[in-house]
Image (cartoon, rainbow, N blue to C red; front, side, top):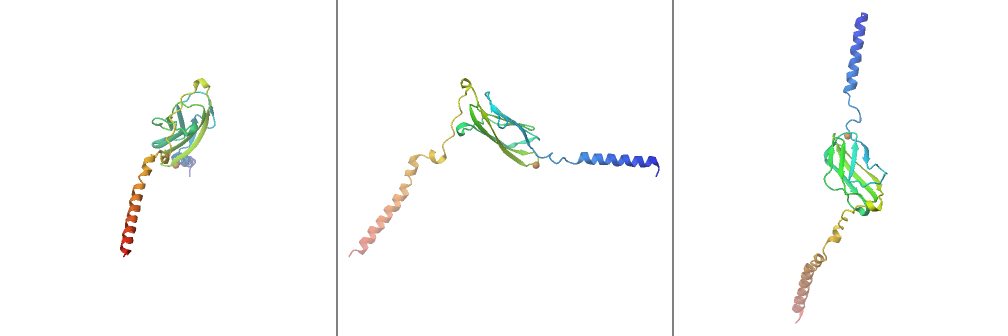
Amino acid sequence: MTRGRFLCRAIVAAVAAGVAMLGAPAPAAAHSILLGTTPAEGSVVTTVTTEVTLTFSEPVRAQFTTVAVTGPGGRAYATGDLSVRDAVVRQPVHPMGSGDYEVAWRVVSLDGHPVSGTFSFTVQLPAEQEPAAPPAPPPAADDAEPGGWRLWWWVPIGVVLAGVALLLVRVGRRRAP
Ligand SMILES: [Cu+2]
């Protein structure tokens, strides 16, 4: 083998190895990881905020993405449709008053894997900047049931009781001489 030929083969081998490395998928490329949020986890917010944003490492699918924002008194603060632009999810919220907030989010990575998590933060506003709270959460379904509806249960029960009473009266008459 001449020296020139050896060098040529070495260069070809090096280029081939480089191409193979470039072509191999990076291990974490497919999966979306939450990089940061606004407001940030554990932060204290001192201005009126009307949006929660989440930034991921990879683009996420708009479909199946949910962001729930729960504020003081269990009130739901998310309002309107969220938007997804590449790796950034934006959820409009009611102006957030002072108190503790929790955000529960769920996204689907482009590779189809669901990713979810929660983060929380605190809002502390001066009294003069305090916005009105959103409507209170609706009461539990059981409490919302009108009282009159339960009274209707007494109709079939009454019919059955009346039927039993009639039967007893008939049996009693037959036995009588
Ligand atoms: Cu994945």
